[in-house]
Structure formats: C-alpha cells, structure tokens
Image 1 (cartoon, rainbow, N blue to C red):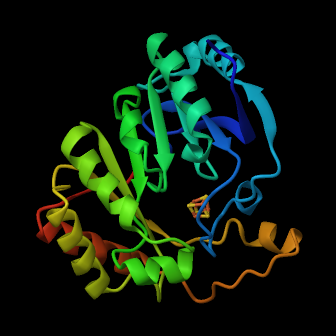
Image 2: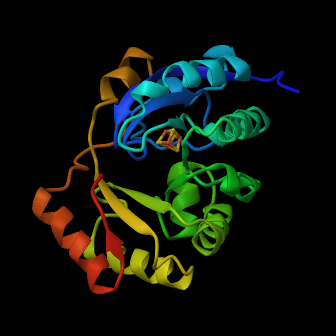
Length: 243
Ligand code: SF4
C-alpha cells in the first residue's frame, strides 16, 4: 500500500554530483548529525519541510523520465534521507519497480541501511572521520554504525561511492589520509570509489540568517593539498574519483 509521505525541503535537477547522469534530487528534511559546516542548515531540523506523498514522487519521477539522460534518475539526499526510513523504503521500492535508476546520499548512521542496498543502484556514503571519539565530539554521534554499514556496503553493494568532506584541522592532514586508507582497507572497501570534497562555505550565510553561529574557521584546503591527499589514497591501492 502506498500511503506514506516524505518531508522534502528542496528538490531539483543536478548533473553528476548526486549520482550518475542528470538526476532529480530530493533533499529530505531532518538530520541526526550536527556537522558544524553543514551547507544545508535548513535541512538539519525535523520540524520543517513539505509532506509529499510517496506516490506523488513516483509520478513526478515518471513524468521526468526524458530528463534522466546519461544514466540519470532519482536521488534522495538531505538532511539525512534515512531519518525518514519507512517512507524512503517505500519510495525506493516503487521507483525501482518502475525501472527508475535510484541513488541515495547518506551519512551512513541508519542501523537498517543494508535493507536499502537492493533498492539503490548507486550508494553514496559519507565517512567524515575514522576516530569514534572525534566523530562523537564534533558531529554529535559515534561512527560505529557508519563503519559497520560501510563494511556491509563494501561487501554487498556493487556501486559504492565513499565521500570524505575535507575539513582542515579536522580530517585533512596527511596522517588523516593514511588513517582513512587503513580504515577503508580494513573494512574491505578497496573496490569502492572514494571522493575527497574540499571544504566550502556555501551554507555559511544560511546559518547566520537562521540566527545560528557558524563556528568553522580557516578550514579551506588548497587544490595542491587535495591532490596530495588523493595521491596518498591511490598509493594504498584505493580508487579516487572526482564527480
Ligand atoms: S550529515 Fe550532512 S545533512 Fe547532516 S549535518 Fe552533516 S552535512 Fe548536514
């Protein structure tokens, strides 16, 4: 039965950055982490956003099919899309049944994430820090479930993209990259694609407009540092991409 709704705070087309090809991207409301650099602070709270019936999303996706070129389709991101797990499960089931390419972009914290593996053509997972204590301290939750989900995804999902937001002073040093490489190899993620996303401040004004303090400073990394970090991962046999 199709009866659930998804709370969406933003939607639109994007090419290649939220999965392959041209994709209709739904930003789902609410997130269980508290990244101080979040570029969508309006999506962090659970109180806002529309209640869009899952069936409407299916119909919208079907009407947009001609736009899904270069392997495109529908992507759910956030906020954190898995915070609306049941409705997301229902939406992905319907889209998959209709033959629409599906992707999710997730912070990896959902204990039930492996239930979605068979419904998602491309799985994009963040890994923001290798250390559970640092993860807890800065992001508000440990990385324990994220790492077990990463291991499960590496073992079971054929198209896994791991993304690390590179934040100077948090996770972007050469030593950090060595630790990430060790972690991914230990988790069996040597076949996954890995992307390093340099820190940006696209969301900074939105924090202040919402009366919230933006606490991240001097976190940019240079293009050379990014390349150097990518090279460290490559030297360990990992596959680094830029989407
Ligand atoms: S996990 Fe993503 S949506 Fe959630 S706070 Fe962090 S950056 Fe924002």
